[in-house]
Length: 228
Length: 228
DNA sequence: TTAATTCTATTTGTATTACAATTAGATTAA
DNA sequence: TTAATCTAATTGTAATACAAATAGAATTAA
Image (cartoon, rainbow over all chains, first blue to last red; front, side, top):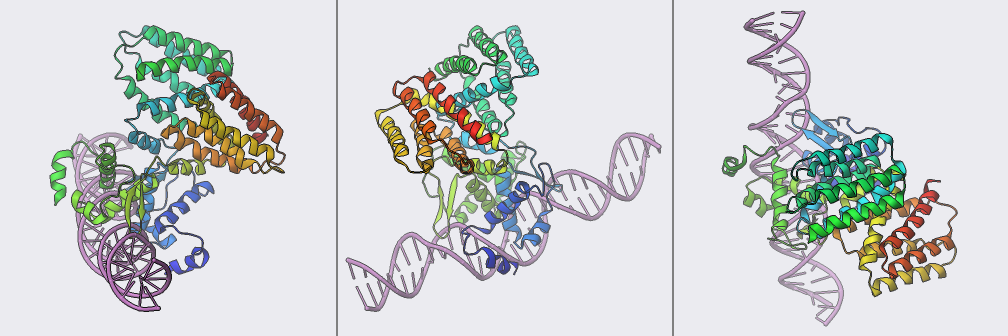
């Protein structure tokens, strides 16, 4: 019924399913700032009427948006736009290549080399202190239980760049890497600490090239250990 | 009906919608190599019976997988697993931050700095020749119509690393960047060519650090132009 | 008054059924 | 052989009904 009116406008151009069109309309609400991250969407029934589609179509669109991490549905409560860019799709992608460890390690290294370069430009005193804390905690750790602080060191660098796009990508990669690391038997705590300190110094001096170089040395070492 | 049997096994653990569980089952087909990229999935009706769920649930799962670029549905034909990691979710993510040009430019730079480093390690004669071709074509281009060859230069580097994860991320970013570039008024062809040649030389010599440095100079220049 | 409990109505989650639209592949005609 | 047509399989859309979960209101107990 309402479909006819819509057809008049767009039927020549589009070659998409209704669900996909609905999906785009919802995304447009965000892009056009009519709704903001965290906002609650109207209930499905209302949106159906508003856009003139059936419930299955509306639900397919919502499911799709949810799998992209753009909205979050809660039974009986409602549907909300998520607060920030989600790493959900990235994680799914990574699970598909989880047997390709080399690709994951390379991707992680690539991203971190870029990240640390920006981090050097944007470094603040607070971030430096947080980084130093992780190094101290690693030094104080017993056995080889320093993985947590190791991960934190890298996450702090990623966070310091304050870039939602990069953030979304690196989180999933670091988590994948933790799983990969878990399989390494002989860890070398002292060497890791030494590397982290070198990176820390370069960041402290705000020297992008030096930071890159230090991170390069570190990650190449990690790569060798992981890939044997 | 069949749901009961399933509940006995998993109801204590899971807290997911049926559609999400179905989604995972389908992904598992890929991970466990029961089906491969490009393969055709059984029709919806068959999968419904197989997994004991209704058609809407099955369709929601499929919609979700399609929006992640994992499957591709064709009316009347069937549903196929996609051949390679899709950049679809990345593109969607980017559209959400399309107003945050700085984030996109930074992400692109970060990734390319890492990519070019690996590219230097993996460089082949064929890739070098392809890169050189784009430089020649840029030199021969009239006016400022060299954007296409500029893009190609960067894509060839990305492709040369031969990493599906990085490939999926960089494509969307480069395309976004093309749109951003289109808004720049005064372009500097000679400078771009000079930069590309420097990168080319570093790659030819297979020197990761030098390649990084050359790309760094190039992208910082691009960033300044884009962000004014 | 306050806190704990129960209830209710709203919203998402799932199922069933029916039909429409598309088009690959088979069939037929030129 | 080629082109046009037809058919049947598969995805696309709709309408409807009920189930499940739970936020918030209403109630009760302390």
